[in-house]
Length: 315
Image (tube, rainbow, N blue to C red; front, side):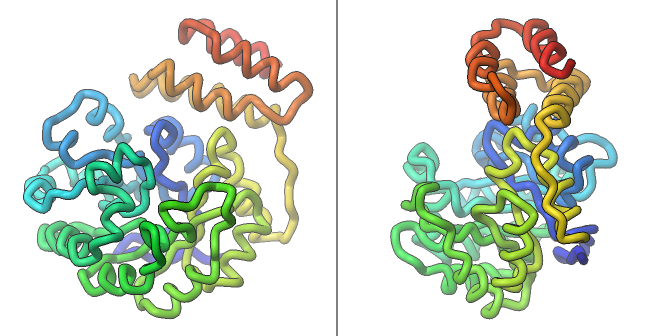
């Protein structure tokens, strides 16, 4: 099992934690990295909010000393803003900048950002060139298209603009989770490009990751939903890739991982009770009475209540 390189960045293995809104803050990235993720990203942040130094956005941009490699994921639709953004001194805190061209949220596409950008591959290419001119390592995360499949055209434009790697989520922006990710398009993109291609979509086990790599030839596998409330998925997938052995989900270890997340959130001063209750609800599973426990958990009113409740679950 080998890692790969994104530009000058060397990854120790092929597993990446996907940038996910309301999930991949500094504390969550750390527990996923400890479990084995070779690369992690901030959640998607709007260029405009970064430039205006939005308080919540600045909190979500936090990194820690030694968090390497780490990517900052951004989206936007204004090339002038990208030009200003590319010169920000704080970008030195990140190993690469990833442009989100895949988010299907109406709130984002309504601003002609996220997956809306797939309608205009030329614009994506210009944004990449703006960042590359400042000497930044740049990647992009895309879907197969907005409402029709133009993934090969988009991928070639991204490579031609100088991107260092490309992540392909193998669904259209109009596809919901009920439609299976179409991995054959990851293979087609990989066969069309020379830069590294990272596959994304429907990875929930070690066998899923191994099969994606075998079927598509992708350089890396990005885990998204499978890692929400289950950071130890990286540990299990790595073991499978090394030994072929699938290890079952362990709810006790998982609750301990959530307890570690809570401690790190306090340590890094990024406590957000609404976020913690959302993530915590995903951790509380896999045991008898989990549904009742989740319902009790989401009604908690303070961080102290959360910590006490989780400590009772760990015992």
